[in-house]
Length: 563
Image (cartoon, rainbow, N blue to C red):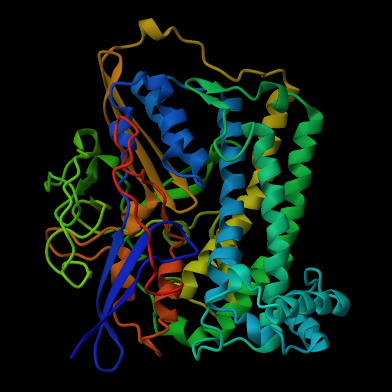
């Protein structure tokens, strides 16, 4: 008799995600359902607005990914009107976005995901001398690795436990049989967990130099950027570079070595393909530097066939809602997409319906196929296309760990791909800064393309499509009568967390869960480990409110599972 496990909500993510899995008598997952639990209504809010205001509203889609939604929205309007922005504006936008890549990847691994691999309580029994030697196995110059420092970290963790104040470390599956690190390895990771709190704060400062503030920056306008005084200031440029240099040091001496440690400890699960989805990967490419070189390659891979990479065509993207809580089930182009809610109840026992609609997330498809987007997709496509910016980094990591390309297509492998990508983005921030300085050196100070709004076409449509930390992000706008007539955002988590479609094809989360074995159904750590590997961001939603501001109802979520 098969049994259902419900985790609602999944914590250590942005937003509200519910996962249900069905396991057989051997605790092997045979079916899975991923359900987004909040309605996203930004598209509806944008209808009838001035297109120039779209970015400021669309960035509120998420409290974490504010910059990338802001940029995609502004760029969609620029595409509709045929506005080409100055090179300096493009570089400044890239500097902010790629700094966000680095911050997002570090925060995701250490603060949202590492506790799926790291047993905090086991770190309390670590020998600090041995822990220092252990760190030296993975890096020639380990990050903040003195015995005294490690002792202070262990003491800090111990004080939390003794006082019963684990705080954000509470309710973990500590002692679970799926944890594989030694006490010393756990302590090394927790050392870097705490250091990463400071690092992510510093990256926020770097982003704010050109973005004005973060989250919810204010530096973008249709036609360019407004952070003119900052990019003209040698001190501000130097401040940015100084922070990125410090961050690069952390990546090289902590993040990459920690992932090598994890790959070694969980090598068996990697080789078994635990957490592998369909092997369909989608990338739109982008981020030019130097003389037209691209940081990321565009391309489409199907079924892990790395020998054939098709070209990416945004016209082949559709969204359908046959299993999502919206009225129109048909696969539609985002330009024609609809966002009309149609909620259907759950089963009487509170579980999701096995048939019919079960999520607020639509099902994006590319030529009708499920696609996985994100760092794994970018690194796979870049490696397969022999990218000079990606392949050397991937080969170094593969040589150091014994991984093959197919091995990255796994739960642990996604994290390895993300760490390599953080390393790449951090390094190429210096190249892009050099491009900006070179322009300023030769008196190219243009940051905005002048236009007269009243002379722009009243009817137009356009798209802003970018690689962002979690994958391909696209905003589509259709303008009629100089106002927004229709707006759709197809976000990375919509691709990866999509429900099944009319052909019963599972989304990437769901497919990646099939076949994994759960050691303890009452503590499904393995499920969390796979879902977290995608870096879910379900915040692309708004709460439903009454137009007159009256309270309709109030809900309190009582998690069935604490993590």
